[in-house]
Length: 133
Image (tube, rainbow, N blue to C red; front, top):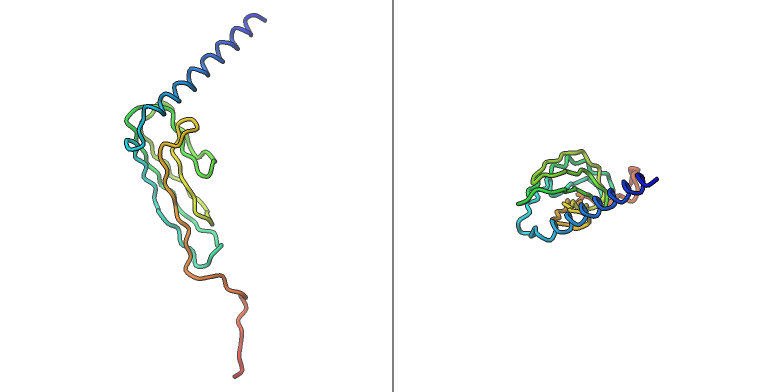
C-alpha cells in the first residue's frame, strides 16, 4: 500500500514537473521565433456549403526543443516530443474556414488559417427550368 502511495506521489510530482516545464518553455519562446507554414491557404468549391478536399501540409520550427502539438479547431492532429521542428501531412474535408494552431501545453504559439471560398451561390433549385416564350 505504501509503495502504491509512493509511486502515485512520484508520478504526480513528475507530471507537475513536466507541466511546469511546458509552461516555462512556453514563456521562453517568443511568437516571432516560431515558424509555422501551412499550405494551402485557401480551399475553393463550386458552390457554398459543398465539401472542399484539401491536402494539408504543415511545417514548423522553434528555437528550442520541447513537446509541441498541432491542432485544428481544438482537435489535436499530431504531437511531437522533445523536438524543435516537424512536418505533418493529411487529407482534410472542410466546409468552413479552419485555424491550424501550434501548441505547447494549452498555449497557442503560432496560428495559421485556411480560407473556405466558393465560385457560385447556392442554386435555389437544381432542376432545369424550361420556358416556352
